[in-house]
Image 1 (tube, rainbow, N blue to C red):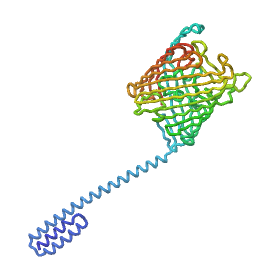
Image 2 (tube, rainbow, N blue to C red; image 1 turned 120 degrees about the vertical axis):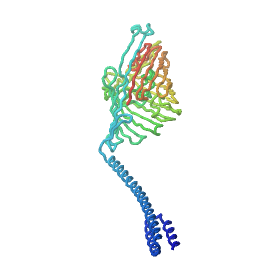
Image 3 (cartoon, rainbow, N blue to C red; image 1 turned 90 degrees about the vertical axis):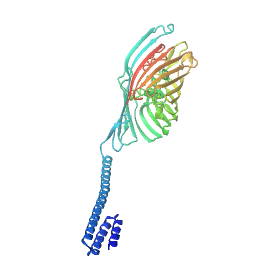
Image 4 (cartoon, rainbow, N blue to C red; image 1 turned 180 degrees about the vertical axis):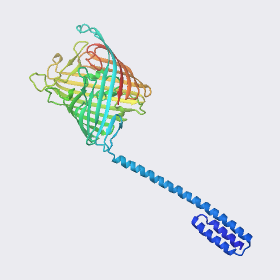
Length: 489
């Protein structure tokens, strides 16, 4: 009797892993024990009662553990379901929301949910102080000119706003921009203002007022290494025009082009062609190749971010335009094309041709490189005029050449940069050339977006022309100090 009861207890204890089987087998075992021991003495019944009580306690303990595990798993499943439901609902509401998206990303913007309409607002403020001392060195040749003079003033070099984006279609683009710090005689000047369409990244078109794709300094004016572009750039600067351009990236961020047909140099005044404008258009084109790095890294001249690798950009451009003779009896004439900085046949001295009459051929090439805080650049310019009227010494042709060399180095990474620049303009076959030397420093408050620039420029012989930005006076020796605070957003 005792042997059966013992073996039954072992059987019961070995099957406790399953609660339902545990309960059933415990009941059967208890009944069997009671039946077999029905005639046992009282002390044996007491032993059975004690064993049965212990078995019930064990069953209760195992049932509680099983229930707790089930509740924990069930709770996890429920919480996961609630979280997934909330996220799905939030995503659904976001995608179906009619509220516009807005914020700041390289400019302030507001955009419709379907991205078919977007307005981006950017700007460029440059406030500067200028001191300039000009002196006539050749009193014999320029006896009628004052001997010297000084200028000192605060002013805006640029105070520009740009409104750009797309409307009705992500690829139907526009830009409207203007400068509230325009040159003397005008309180406002319209800048790049056009309508365009992006067919593919490699084929885009725009029509309106825009920068002529020729010189790097004009296309990236807010990113040059000094407060002002070199004076050697001025005779070759085509400025802005009214026309149509095809442009795009043949290789993304590596190889870009732009070709343009337009009204010619500096013909964008007030967004309208000059009165009695010439009906013979101008043609310009520019190609840029970032052999290492990408275009965005090379749209500013300084290496203020400290490029880890050697990166470089090569740009080449060419242009052709023609202007009809300045005949008062000819309706089709234009007076916007001019040349300055041409050498006279005496020494020293420079002269201007305005307006140009005839065909003008232009070319330029520029190279920019950056490496670990060092930035270097070299630019060459050339232009050749076949004039419809005799020029100097009864010649009907003249050629002009210029070049600029420059370097900048970050002596304090990402903050302080020292710069130096040298340039010349010369007229082959004639005696005079202009030289320009510039040294300075740039302090980057927030990278290219906020910076302080300081530069000193010396023109030792004679300046090639009157330039508002450079503060030079034609045929004078100049010393110019410029301090500029720039903000770009």
